[in-house]
Amino acid sequence: MKTTRRNFLRVTSLGLALPFVPAIPAIHAGESSPEWRFGIIPDTQWKTNMEAPFYGTAIHIIDAINAEMIRQKVDFVLEVGDLVEEAFSEAFQTRAQHNKILNENGIKFYPLRGNHDSNNSISPVRCGIAVAQYRAAFPNLPGISGNSGSSPDLPNAAGMTYSFTHKNGKFLLLDTFPLVDDGSEDGKAYKISDYQSWIDTELSKKDHRFALVFAHKDLLGQNHKDNVFSDDKTNQDSFPETQNAFIASLQRHGVRNFICGHDHMYHRSRIKSPDGKSEVQQIICGSAAHKFYLPEPPFLARETSLVKELNRIGFLIVHVNNDGIRIDYHSTEPFGREKFLPKWEICDSFTDLFGDSLNRTT
Ligand SMILES: [Fe+2]
Image (cartoon, rainbow, N blue to C red; front, side, top):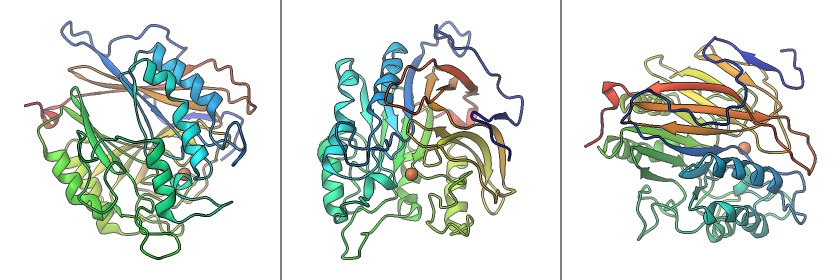
């Protein structure tokens, strides 16, 4: 694919390049549909590795996105992993400190680990230490004993893979990186198949009107060919039964969107399971980091690209009311330096109205 600096591609006419909209329009004309919002931040690594003051996390981009989250009055912010470049205490603490403005505005932050949050390539540590450093920076998450929410009943999974509800929504965040020091060099990571029964249980509960499922790695990446099911870069159809069961579960429970990071680009697509029996929309939610990746073949026939944008800094705002959700992708030029003065534009926007299959409110 020929690549320009921005390389903004709409494969269908589902969206238009929209000018930035300062007002926050309701997603539906219904008078009795109060809207609420939440934000989603993609990978926030920065190129300084372990050096102060960044400690490998894009604090200037995080601050700019947080300002926009506050301006748009979101209820909470969620990040899909790779908060930092290298897993070490100062990095996690620095990332967490840049949520102070969110905390002061009553906005909770829900993190999820990525591969960079579970590994330090410069000063390697056992996975138990890396997990403890992460937990110290992001304590009191759902699923931990005494807190609301739920985690799978698996050693060390509490507060790492977790679900929570907020108003009419439910959110499942899946950690697929080493959590248990089993004596191996990297430690033991749980697979999606280890989580499947918990996923089904959580999505079966009648405590939500809609649900979204998040992981750091993708179902199918445009650049990265490892995925949420396997590190095998040579076979994106690895563990087909696991893939079939997972995507079938999402479809059966009315989860229409799987949201992920890892690929440092914005890409919205439809993905079928390897057996072709079920389907979900995947949103790779952009990059808030120093690096961007370009699409590289192979691309599987079971994925249909809808909207793609490369080489821009971005984030999502999800607007919710009683009728459905609207997901807006905001992006700006990256500048690439340590001064960041964004001019946000809405570069993709789509609406999912709740159907009968999502009629879960008790
Ligand atoms: Fe990643």
